[in-house]
Length: 141
Image (cartoon, rainbow, N blue to C red; front, side, top):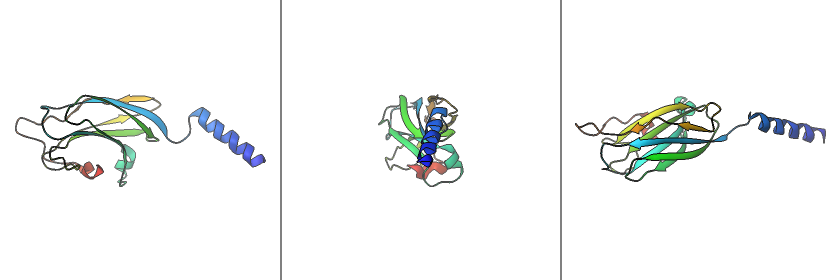
């Protein structure tokens, strides 16, 4: 009985101080594209610490914006301190980052915030053509 009471007090104290594990954070931002051409535009929210450590699947959330860039808001449950947010214009609709897809990313620190604002993710292709080098997160989607 004493153990149950102590465990209950510790659990309540953890919740009260915000020292627990995952919490909900709203990730807000916008995407921009040179032209509304090509395949769907994906926004991926990644646990940056897990990504940096080489974990297989650090993706926390995915959002498809179809063919139109614009504002997004994604509620994620995470215990991460830092998030990496990627935008990928999947021009060949392969659901992987491949040659010819356009990409952009930004890293944001959550801190104690209930929401984070991501700098604009501009997946615009240069006038010479689409971006052709897919970074190491290509396998995340």
